[in-house]
Amino acid sequence: MLYVSELIADFLESVEIEHGRSRKTVENYSLYLNRFYEYASEQIAPNTDLQPCQITPELLRKYRLYLNRFSDNQKHQHLSVLTQAYHLIALRGFLKYLAKREIKSLNPSLVDLPRAVHKQVTFLHYDEVERLLSAIPLDTETGLRDRAIIELLFSGGLRVSELVKLNRDSINLERREFMVRGKGSKDRPIFISEAAAERVQNYLDARTDSLPALFLNNSRNSGTVDTSGDFRRISPRSIERLVARYARLAGITKHVTPHTLRHSFATDLLINGADLRAVQSLLGHANIATTQIYTHVTDTHLREVHEKFHSATS
Image: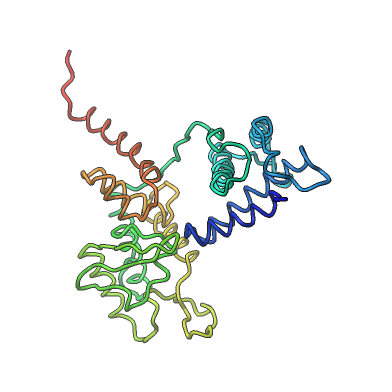
């Protein structure tokens, strides 16, 4: 007899090993599917293990209603439509896994997702990026570092998690390109501008150490040596703080994060005519649908261009 609890564990192993998903993705799938399992067990089999054949269209209908009405006991927060969709995507993936193994259960095609809700993408216009960069003083090593970090984030579209892992020997400043390993352990090329390469070189020239990390935390309490000898490497949180600080100094009222600069990178490419598939590759998105969130931003830009330059009839 096969039980849902055991099959969920098998599915999560499959997601990690066969599909190469990141540990964070597997953790999220585990959360979503365990939430389904707990609800379904309570509804169908409170005293016994749930079986795949007990997952029915009626159970799915009730589960969707449960997600829509779900409220966190501590924070009293409801699930957004997007989060509800993530729960259903995980369930549909699990049901596809069962179908592939020829285990009788609910047809995965019956799991409809909520109507798509477009994420609100915050990005900086080019003049705002220039204001952000101009707010950074260049008369200290810290200033040189911060300028290089923000130039790289905007020029290369890097995730902050990718940037903090870079070493000196990771990046070819002469060729202005290098490889990073992003989500799902997938490698992709990064290309940077001459200005970004120059700023990184200026920062490295100002350093007197021989540590491998490309960017260092300059705080005196910057951490302890680990077993690999890699220490003082700047953290994602430190980068988040410095980006927010310079945004305030530049008088930018938007909520600016390192990911805002990644959004700005993508938006700038599309506004200037880049192909959506090319932008997908440069960002390292596995699915083109993820990249399409930027088309709504560029549509707004096109409307602004139309209103500004198109001649209206009287």
